[in-house]
Amino acid sequence: MDLTTLIRDIPDYPKPGINFKDITPLLKDPAGLAMAVERMANPFRGKGIEVVCGAESRGFIFGTAIAQALSAGFVPIRKPGKLPHTTASQSYDLEYGTDTLEIHTDAISQGQKVLMVDDLLATGGTLKACLDLVHDLGADVVGVTVAIELAFLNGREKIKPYDNVHAVIQY
Ligand SMILES: O=P(O)(O)OC[C@H]1O[C@H](OP(=O)(O)OP(=O)(O)O)[C@H](O)[C@@H]1O
Ligand SMILES: Nc1ncnc2[nH]cnc12
Image (cartoon, rainbow, N blue to C red; front, side, top):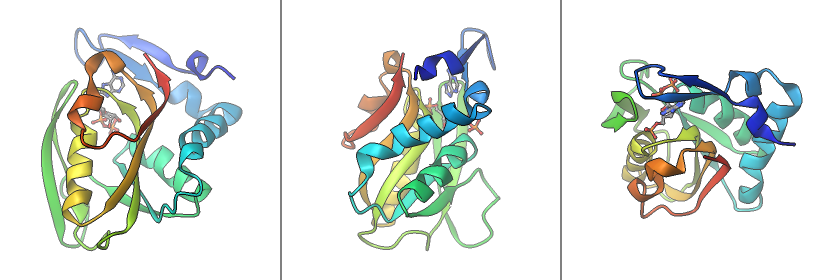
């Protein structure tokens, strides 16, 4: 199944010069959604993943589904002010702006095996912020999985030394 047929290009959104990869056609397609989750999770089966982490909001969509597929728990990394307990936060740049993400400081325990999930790797700013947050909590990051990688933006370089990065679709 060619999942690229379910990704829609929206030119100049949210800013001029950005070619936005719209995943909503994929999300509403039952077979497409199931296949995307399967392909994102498969390389990490049998790797002892205990916790899947994903960033608000598109990272939640795939993250929880992948957590279920791997019989793992899910830890949300959220936009500022949304988590009720004690948080750690990290600011970052992304392809079309800047933002801050937060995690509960008790969300991950020392040495827990973590899989980091997002829908899309562009500049890598978002994933780097997420990886820094879980690293500081003592996570053992087993890998990163995304549905889409915009390889021409070199996000993989930004998230080194994490190099076990799996992308289902690459542009
Ligand atoms: O690699 P980067 O350049 O950091 O870009 C990738 C990030 O951008 C999007 O999130 P966005 O902040 O737009 O939030 P959303 O998930 O709430 O739409 C996307 O879901 C990734 O998390
Ligand atoms: N080009 C893009 N399309 C969709 N989401 C994005 N997040 C960062 N860059 C993006």
